[in-house]
Image (cartoon, rainbow, N blue to C red; front, side, top):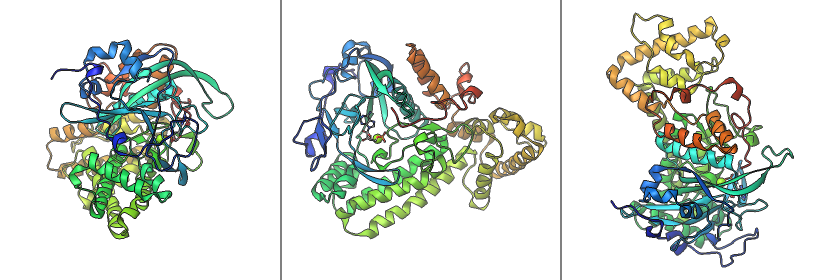
Length: 531
Ligand code: AMP
Ligand code: MG
């Protein structure tokens, strides 16, 4: 296939061509009614410089690899140049934030460029995060800083390579501008480097795109948004009708449940599961104060803004997703005017999530199937075992495949590969060790009853339990270096994270557990929404 220059990209801007536009192009913060979006031009940046690229996204967009090294690419990916065919806009949506209806929110620091249509008919919406103010910026500046942009760039690509549905990132660029931020909302504002991530997704439509018109009883706009979404991204469901709306909702329920199963598999905590941060495609979206479980603690959240209630803690994510889906169901009810099909779809969430979770856990343990007779207890007890002492979730599961399960093995033999998963050796008392071993013995029995060969079991486990995840401190190290002008670690880390299930001899340091210095360091274990 021939690759393309920037000018050869084909734009087919279905969102702005179909949905109603805000007649005003005024940028000041304001209420926008009866419109899905406002046209805005990205702010000019001082000195654009690309510091991160996703080779897979360059290929997906059919771009020539040499294009990304050009000044023009940097100019386009920071909004300094708008290509012919682009139609730049900020979307209007609302949302429930931390459980409360927040009214209009919208793209306050994201400006979509348009929809690329590839030669195979694939559609990709490009969106610049941090490209300047929009009517939805409220009191903020519409900009993004380097640390949060590095985090979004790396995590969206890492999640993709882990097999987790997610929005993508084509590029990470410095703007050359300085941005004022109060990182911990404690009155210590400082200038930081501005940056822009070019995000990519089929669309950036969120639950909140439906909630806002519904809350305003603007049923025409609600219907137009739903019809557009179904026709462009769910065409297999057929032409919109009350039955199709219900089927569509059922599919969103399934996709959302599947996404959460993946989060629980890899130890990802989103941190801000507000309904404006829930993609209608079931993609992980809006990487803010997210984090990765180090020691397995279902009550952990990285988000200091949520430290009091921990609404979005790791273990609460499945229930929160269901709550968010209920808000979406309420929002689209006027299109169906029957509660029953929506309720039925919503009820399907628990079943879908549970089945998905059980299969996922069986895969993590390398079992042939989920056997409700024994596996329910085995899995529940494992979650307790993981909390007896500070246990690195990623290392524990990855190394479980190496545990000697032979009948003649000793407790020490069994424990040996798991030792490196424990953060505090003193916590491994005789009592704790014996509880861990009691579980391993039961696990060995269960593996014995499984029909998989030893090889097949290890293969399944190593394809389910990643060796490399974007550990919080690794992202922070890349940020520290970038802040000092050294961008090499961003690409180095991305390259490791592109193959998270491979052993990658020579890269083992990236798989090590969090060093002690990172335990309480801001950015490593604690993050605020400031970005
Ligand atoms: P979040 O929960 O971080 O996705 O953001 C919630 C809302 O705040 C969205 O409408 C964002 O567009 C808006 N927002 C967050 N940060 C900024 C910023 N720096 N400038 C303008 N709007 C922002
Ligand atoms: Mg958001």
